[in-house]
Image (cartoon, rainbow, N blue to C red):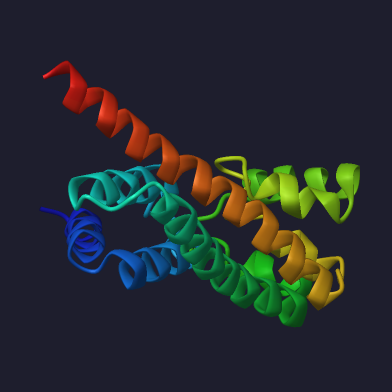
Length: 175
């Protein structure tokens, strides 16, 4: 098993054994270290809510918890991007396995939609992990960044958690 597979397996067990803190940490890590897909984290959390007999209100709680974790991770990337700037970041992209083309796509989003791109970008796979970089480079106000990131991250997290819960219900009803 590769290191990434072992890491993802650890995240799965973390969520299964410690739902709220596990989701916070997984959302934080998936934002800072993109090999963990949020498309797997939140549906798993939704299924865990169902499996543990917890009510649907926990979809909201877990989604918000994940949104806060993703916002914390996004803020770290925002600060690094703001401090290093475009030239400084370009040197390090190869070490964190981000392609220049992906960063250009995020830049384009930010230029096209402005600050709103943070809310929208946090809900689009492939952009969501990168949208913090142009926000930092283009000096978006930190408080606005945090609010917009929290909104977009919570919407995304709640939707995916709900999907995991309701697809779990559908699966249980089939069998």
